[in-house]
Length: 404
Image 1: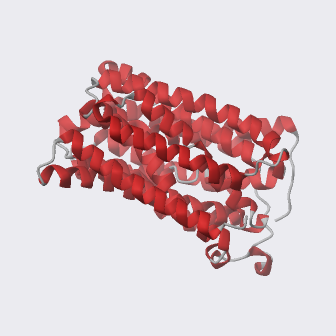
Image 2 (image 1 turned 135 degrees about the vertical axis):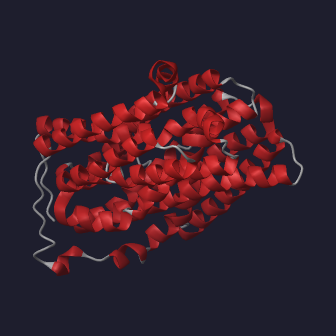
C-alpha cells in the first residue's frame, strides 16, 4: 500500500481520536495494580491468582495480534477498532458484574481482546499517513498517552473507589468506550487497501518471522519489554505494599508519580528522537547502551528490598524507555504492505511476555513462600529471576546484531 501523507490539521485530529481509545486501553491495563488490595480481599486471591487476573488482559490481547495484523492490512483502523471496542464494552460490563474469580478472569480476557487494536490500529495508520521520520515520534507520543492512562488508573481511581466503588468505575468506562466508537466512525479515514486486489504485493506472515532483525528482538519483546510492562502495571504496586510497607493509598500515589514521570519522559523522548537520529544516535545504538542501565536500576531495587519505593521503580521504568524503540524499528524494517502484520507480530511478543511475566513473577513469589522464604525475600528472588532472563535476552540481541 502506498504512503498517503495527510495534512497537519487532519493528522492532529486523527491522532487525538486514536489517543482516546488508547487512553482507555491503558487505564484498563493498569487498573489492577491499584485495585489489587481490594480484589485480593474481596475474592481471597493469592499472588498467583492476582498475576493471572492481571495477565488475563494480556492473554486476550495477545490472542488477537496475528489475526489483527491481517484485518488491519485489509480493512484499516476505522473498521477494526470500532468493531473490537464493542467486545471491550461487553468485557468491562461483565467485570463490573462479576461475582467470582473466574468471572473476573473471563471479563479481563474479553477486555484484552476488545482493546487489542487500540495501539496497533493507530500505528498501522501512521505508517501510511505519517512521514517515515515521524514514526518514532508518533510511537513515543502514543506511549505518552499510555502513561496518561496509567496515571488515571492510580490516584484518581483510588480517590473514586470510596465514592462510587470499583464496579461503577468499570460501568462508567463502558459508557466512555461507546463514545470513542462514535468518534472513530466519524473522524478516522476509510482504508483503501491494494492488498486485497494484488495478493503478490501483500506479503505473508512468514516474511516477518523469518526476518533476521525481527528474530533478534523476540527475547527482548517477550521478557524485557513484557516484564517491564508487568512490573509497571502490576508488581510495582504489591512490592510497595507488601515489601516496602506502603498503605494502599501511598502505593497508588507512588504509581501516580511513576506514570506522571513516564508521561513527561515519553513526550520529551518523542520530541527529540527525530533530532538525535539525525546526529547519528540511531535506535540500535540507543538500545545497546541504554538497556544495561535499566538492569543496574533493577538490581538496586532487588538489593534495597524494603527500602525500594516509588523512586526506585520510577528510575527503573525510566531507564527502560529505550525498549520502546524496538516496535517502530521493526515496522520500518518492512514495506508498508506489511505494516499491520509486522506491528502486531511484535506486539504479540510483548503481550505474551507480559502475561507470562505477570503470572510468572507471582508464581515464583508463591513458590518461594511455600519453600519457607519470607515475603520480602520471595519478592527479591522473583525479581532476580526476571533480571537474569533480561540479561540473557539482551545478550542474544547483541550477538545477533553485533555488526550493526
